[in-house]
Image (cartoon, rainbow, N blue to C red; front, top):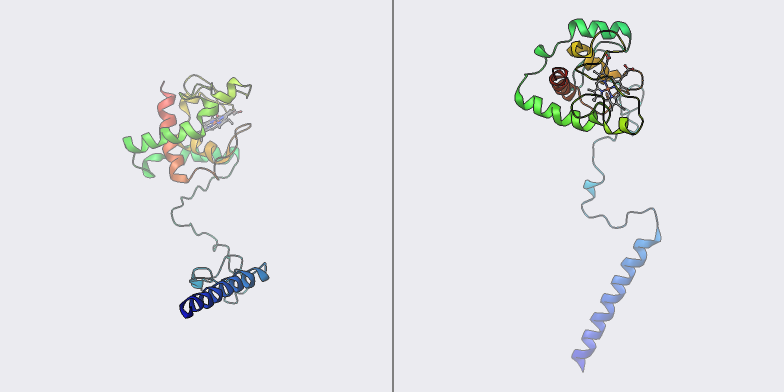
Length: 196
Ligand code: HEC
């Protein structure tokens, strides 16, 4: 009899504790409740949008100092203009920027298939899927003429890189989607398609 009572008291106590945890955790809707290992959420580093008295302007997110290059980024100091296009053509060359290996070419092919083939077609003939649905056809890399003059097959490293970076007419810029090194690999693959 006494043993039964003991279990009942223990059971009731457990239920009361459980219920009070459930109710108190729901009281404040904005509260995260009981946090396990809180330093996983409340870290000591500043969040980019947090005020920060270590900087003059009081912000954590700082604009990089002029002339700096983010790690892993490659500068392309040619503006989005006809002059920038021509200057890139004259002085932006793959040789000094990336090793022209079969591995890089294979990656270039993969990237081209993803980003460019919907318009340019898998073999660069300007017959991609969206063109078949009415999008203006880009000129063929091997037999077409560039709208900026000259044959497509003669487009240089710099001209192709400039086009991926800024786009041209109805082709948009891919600067925000394709990292600089990946653009170089795509240029390698476009050169292959120019020879078809
Ligand atoms: C939305 C369709 C579309 C996509 C996607 C696209 N292009 Fe184009 N591209 C065009 C069109 C259209 C032109 C012709 C524009 C013109 O000269 O008026 C063109 C032109 C070009 C030219 C010729 C530039 C010149 O100087 O004449 C190159 C090189 C080129 N594209 C490369 C690429 C590469 C590389 C990709 C993938 C990263 C790509 N394009 C993705 C539509 C596209």
